Image (cartoon, rainbow, N blue to C red; front, top):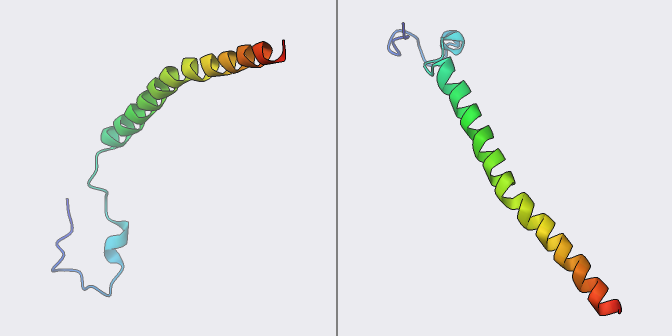
Length: 65
C-alpha cells in the first residue's frame, strides 16, 4: 500500500516512515552478487600478486649473485 503524494503536504514528515518499495530479497540478492563478484576478482588477482612477488624475489636473487 503506497502513500498518495497528493494527500500528504510537502512540509509534513508523515511519509518518512512509509514502507520501502524495494523487496528484501532483491537487497539480499544484490549483496550476495556483490560478494560473489568481489571473491571472483580476488581469486583472479591473488595468483598474479603471488607470481609477481615470486618473480621479484627471483630477480633479487639473480642480481645479488
